[in-house]
Length: 81
Image (cartoon, rainbow, N blue to C red; front, side):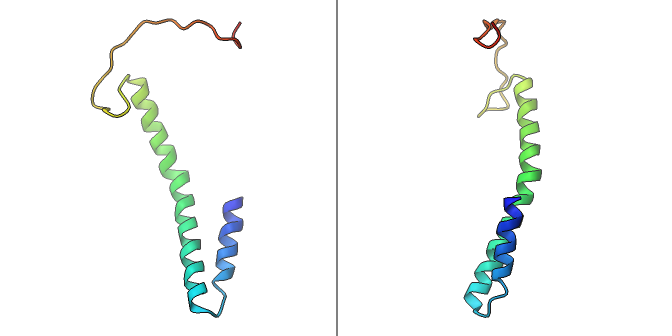
């Protein structure tokens, strides 16, 4: 929702007669739009890839190396008791 308001404000700023303000407003509105599209597409894809990596037991930085499986059982926390 905030994205729409910010983009609308910058697109309205593009109606200005001053060339510098118009250019800045168009670039800012374009950047906000691209940022929004990247967040709703790429972020979800990266999270699903990270979930698959975690499920396979691979490390964070060296994702081609598989970690050792440990059979540690976690003790229940305060909420589970």
